Image (tube, rainbow, N blue to C red; front, side, top):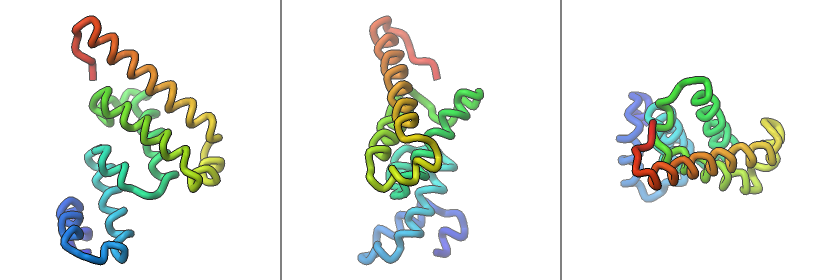
Length: 136
């Protein structure tokens, strides 16, 4: 808990690994993953967060920011595709279905994520075909 208060989230997660009863620390672990995702945009941390609606909202907000010109939130096509697939996976979760209806219709969210995954995948394949580097 002291490491979390000091904003040493990675260190706190490392320390949790030494505990046998991790269930009692679920809230702390989730908080660490949230903060590390928000600070560093590492997909592994977002994937570890059990709150489906949070994960989906974060993915959609990140894509919306990207559309508005904030380009450094997701660094490459692989990460964007990972975010799409994670979002689609979480949309399929029965827990998220009821909460997503409050945020946005489930089918609209799925459609957005699927469309983006297809667009980014097509772009990546074209870059490979023409032997060019993907733009960030």
